[in-house]
Length: 289
Ligand SMILES: Nc1ncnc2c1ncn2[C@@H]1O[C@H](COP(=O)(O)OP(=O)(O)O)[C@@H](O)[C@H]1O
Ligand SMILES: [Mg+2]
Image (cartoon, rainbow, N blue to C red; front, side, top):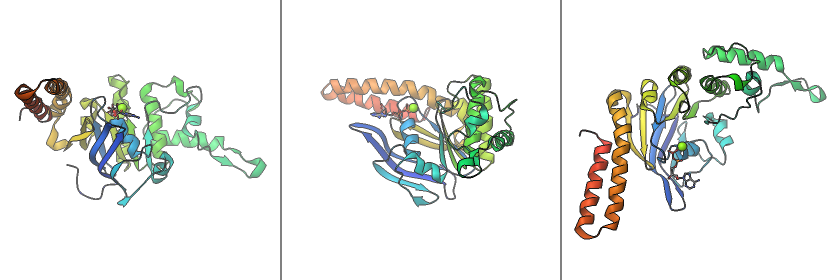
């Protein structure tokens, strides 16, 4: 379970339905300042729905959302952002042809002067971008460089630095390492650790246990819209996490098939299949137990 102390972000038993689809059911999780909460799960587990709920895109149908210890309701992502809940989506919302510094201040351009003399404070934007990237330990040769010429890992890193600069208290990263090779993923993981060291609470979504384990303080595993487990790094161990993600998926698929078969079969045969499916699910959840 997560550590003690008041969590910055704390959701309790939230559920989200899309018509008859149960995307999230009774999901509880926390994120604390200066900690990394990893959110793991296979495709369709509900990861995206959960982060969209956390970032104010969706409203939960049930459950409580607390931030800084107070119940919150968001009408839009802007409300969440104002509190310091920033989300970096995979597509990043950057313009490849624009320079790094222009992208850094995209949508929040600093100005100087008044009335008709008001203009973009280019000097400030360039200097700040350079300083902020340096603070995160990001070594960019030239802030004039178009973002499109950066590697995927560097681009993610710039997005992280930008969110931290604009006051993120909770930084939600949606599969930032998914499309990256080992080395580039390592770059992004380093900046996740940097953000944590600066006191930001990071929610890191991934399906790769090798990316999650080294940086995660605790690991929330989602499966079919429910929390399957919430483990601290100490109680989990890399091997077990890998096993849960890999073996878990196969067993889970098998369990699904058996369930379907159980639905078609009748009487005792159906019951047997249903019991077998349940046993597999238990095995998937707690390998070797
Ligand atoms: N807008 C939507 N309308 C209907 N069903 C949805 C919608 N968004 C997600 N779902 C369903 O909710 C479940 C969880 O999806 P999602 O949160 O995208 O999972 P993940 O990000 O872990 O792959 C899936 O079964 C998906 O089909
Ligand atoms: Mg998703």
